[in-house]
Image 1 (tube, rainbow over the protein chains, first blue to last red):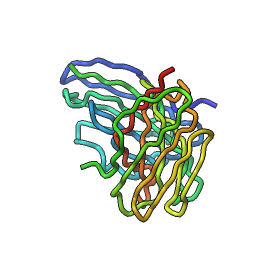
Image 2 (cartoon, rainbow over the protein chains, first blue to last red):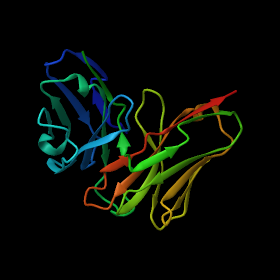
Image 3 (cartoon, rainbow over the protein chains, first blue to last red):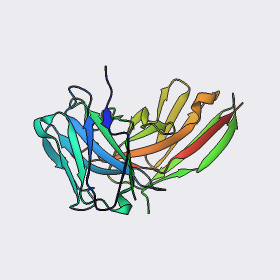
Image 4 (cartoon, chains in turn green, orange):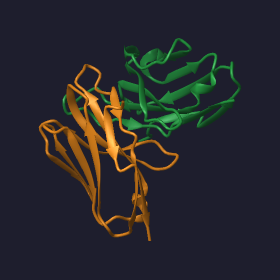
Length: 118
Length: 114
């Protein structure tokens, strides 16, 4: 079974340009999350989709970031226009909908998309 | 201030030896605590998940403990192997309707030497 896949794995863009990151979750996983790690910091939550709906987008840093999950399958995260401080690793993760809330489900992470803004 | 603090920041151990990593959290309310292993350049991989009512959980040579009263957790690695070299991250889930809204620690970088 394929894991969470992310594309591109690495991207270098100039300040002011646009970048779109794509995430394909594990097939059948309703929950899809975006996280990011900027230099020297811990991984931080950005947002959570349940199918195509945004369940929680409280971690999105500003309106230059737009996430979509049309059809409830893959998701994209667009940064427009990119700023230097957006450099970091963007992780996508997914988990199945079933299971106990308190026990949680295993959340599977992709390998990350490394973004460098110059 | 991060609500999930890990110590030590890094450590070096000899192959075959044991080590214990610490995690203190202030996240509240709390639903579950996870330990992840992250190899360099890779995504985090889940090792254990514990609810507030569980005290210990094992996954092979990895054993996690949890004291919900003192808000402390530890990850014990037994008989370390070279492949254990990685960052180990303590992660706490909030009790909300979005259990994937995880609070991450900064990680402990473990280096296992021959």
